[in-house]
Length: 149
Image (cartoon, rainbow, N blue to C red):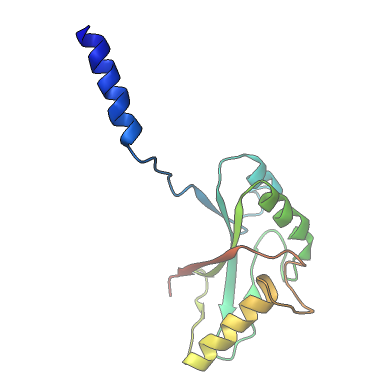
């Protein structure tokens, strides 16, 4: 009887606990030509977030540049549009990672400069419109900041 009561009490206590969800695993994709395709990375089922890395040049009068070393240099890399959509169809969030550590070709000189970069990112990677979207017509889910410089 004591074991049954202990078990019942344990079940009751656990039923009052609020479930929690982990944040999920993220991966940076785009800097190693041997890492396989974006679709392959998503198909593994290992990741909840894929950071397409990197928008490594921007701000301070520079022309923004996407660097997917080993996959397509220079951009546009619109061949990845269908792969991005595939990842998203699996429930994986695909983000643009800005910054990186290779060249430090980024900085913001003013609030106006920051607004121009934000507008560029919105129009070229997120929900805005541009005739020169570097990743094609896919709409990314957000932005990852990997500011190391």
